[in-house]
Image 1 (cartoon, rainbow, N blue to C red):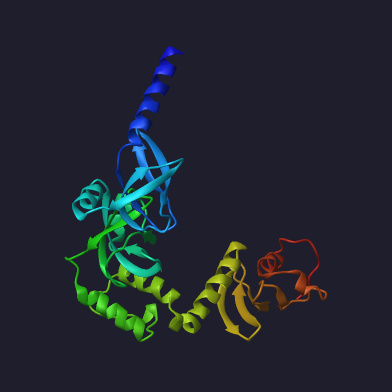
Image 2 (cartoon, one colour; image 1 turned 90 degrees about the vertical axis):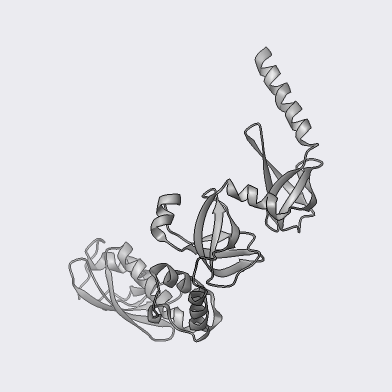
Length: 285
């Protein structure tokens, strides 16, 4: 019991001392800041709450931390050097100083963070869409360090021009284009208003394909008929079917077989089950 009291007293003393110190932390707008005390992470709400950037903070009342001043570049550089570096390509701004990015090298990303996937990068102080940047993080949160001066700036120019010309991702072609660049471009195109009409068929196809594959079927092709799709698909054994499927909830409008007038009781997934004999009942084609 004495040892426990001694430990608790030590922690309390450390916390009291900590509240008289200033600490460096990155902060996104509306987020929290964290500091480590004796191996334990403490989380604070910054004040003022609209602060965004690299700041020097001092613990205040309760679980708040007062912004003392913005941190200078040498301090930020020293903080970042302790984190894992990764090269990425900026895709589009999510909000304020936070961007969605994609690894510039998928193989490198898999080695460093066990995955090649898009993720947010915070406190992007400079840079434009499709520029390659060096970011640092712990595998969970990633912070902008600098624009990658080793990257070819013409790549970003070509990608921005292609986006301006509303070039579909699959039609993108130029010397030096990598799969990672195409993925970053695809991410940006999905968010661009100019691409909305062009990208919708891709989203429709993905939705139909996913619903069919989850039930064991496969999509062949589909035709947009306004309020519904006319879908050509196959069962697991290769039998071909054509069904009219509602867009809102994938409800069956017309199955292509006799369901005794009960077509609308099924959706696309359950219809696959009917065709494959997974439901009880006597259905005659």
